[in-house]
Length: 374
Image (tube, rainbow, N blue to C red; front, top):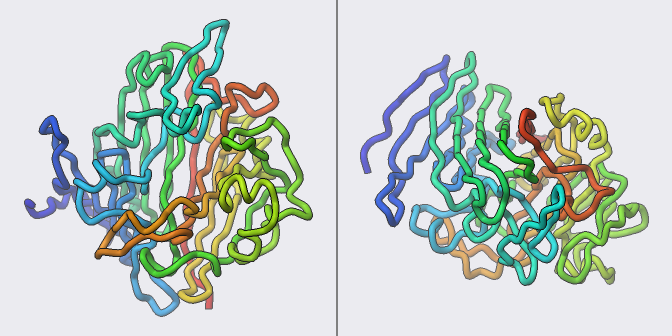
């Protein structure tokens, strides 16, 4: 592999680019390495807009990679579990792989039983994005763009999509999403990183302390499609309004826990109503969740402009995915906090709308802010 080329230097922060692999058709896949003034490092791949690694310090200053993934590109092609990827055109599930819009019914790929998941068989996680380095006064990042053709995976409209990752001196990884379309279409974009704040491959996340700023969640049927109900979290295993170990109630005798094999549910964020009303602009992100690993002292705060967040606790990981440094990723070895609009929103008029029309711009921001506790 050729040595990385330093493209931009801002203060002590750098962004570099290097080849990471090739697609079956010969297209080159690059990886961008972002480093801030504290040595925090994020590596972003142009295939799938994937966060390949994210190194953050623990309470003693030791840097560890806190996201699951692979050491080589070939594994992302053949064994990916959406590790670190951008999911779209519609993240999460659409029931019965269809929706109606303006009098037309659109049929999508049924790639999750009878339902549609994360954009279909070739969603945004499986395409090569165009990357450009960025420098914003000491913040460094990469701007990724992709044009999704009209009819791709069954969706209407040509969609011009941009995802920008920015690493700041404040130890934040900011993800900005923007999109425009020439036909009305549903859009729901998220990042699907699997986090273990102790370090990837270092056991499970059951002792991580989780707070989610949500009084309600959306229960699902037995295929994990929302029923349409927006239910209170109070007196259920879904109450994370105060810091709670993830493992405290993950195997509770509760129908929703049984259906998800643990947590795999959308939480209705308390700040989401304002965010939905301002979806055409980029409102100020509000606090959505906080995760703390007591063993390392690492903490991650999630801020977003989205109305929901999907908590997934790696329930379907079974050790068959062997990741970085030969680590076998077992059940509940990581968690995802996927900021989003709600699953199956095109089929639930009572949910915040995900429809974007010509002449408007989809804009969303999520911030993963890292710190340490003593």
